Image (tube, rainbow, N blue to C red; front, side):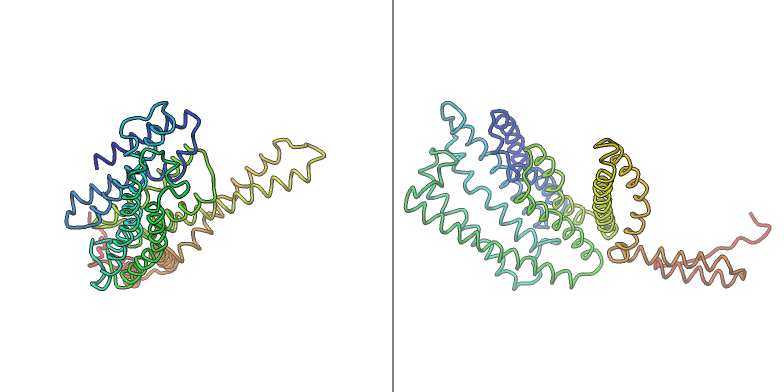
Length: 387
């Protein structure tokens, strides 16, 4: 863990220097994501490995953290030492060589072993060993050929090592690495299939753990996909990488370290509710501005009246829209809580018209058992004249 954190901190300092020198393109979403993954996976991996040493997930996360943070530091350090520095710095060539393959272990393990072994650190069954060996083969294809072929080219610069056919060995290594990259989606798909099978067989706490992991994985995958289409400043990308890139290890840590898990269904429903409400009210805000600017263009021009009216409209609609959307989403994603609330509301309605104490007591007992299913239940009624 210490190596990962030191490498991430050193890479961040180099990023500040490189961006300040006008080379902000080197600190893109992939670089900032590597730093965030290196820190978050290191901390969570250490927590799991130190408290659940028999769970392989902790050790897998430590390898992912080491891979990503070292690749982050080596890439920026070699760029500075070979490209920006007036004279090549010592070990810059070696760091350039490390940056060509250090990303592979973390990338492959994140796509395969982190899914195959979650949450107990064991495979679903022995037959899934073939997928694990496939992941090992992919890792060899991504690392070994390129490491051997690029060693003589380590001092040529991080950007020149893949320009043109520098040697027959390098050409073969690149082809083998391409084969490994093409096999990653297959291994990842098989890993996801194993999780689906595990989820169908799971009950109780393990099912809740899988819900935590799946929720975080979906958000993180959406973020990774969006980085290919959305361009932001380096520091915006850094903030997004820290907030979103850390979700998966944090969710994993909560799922594994907590014996009594937080209710993930409620978190999912609230996330979806606020996302939907934000989208709807954002559309209303823009639509009202456009309509009012068109209607009042001759009277007030492009003044602040449309913006003020749009803000008031969104403010007035927020609570009603949130209640309606939350009720709809809870029916699907937070069913247990929705059913409990619905049962309690029905009991309250019946209680308004019921006066017979025995019927009220019986109805209360049935309502509590249906809503929360307690292990035991007792009702105490205070008699008149007692304290």
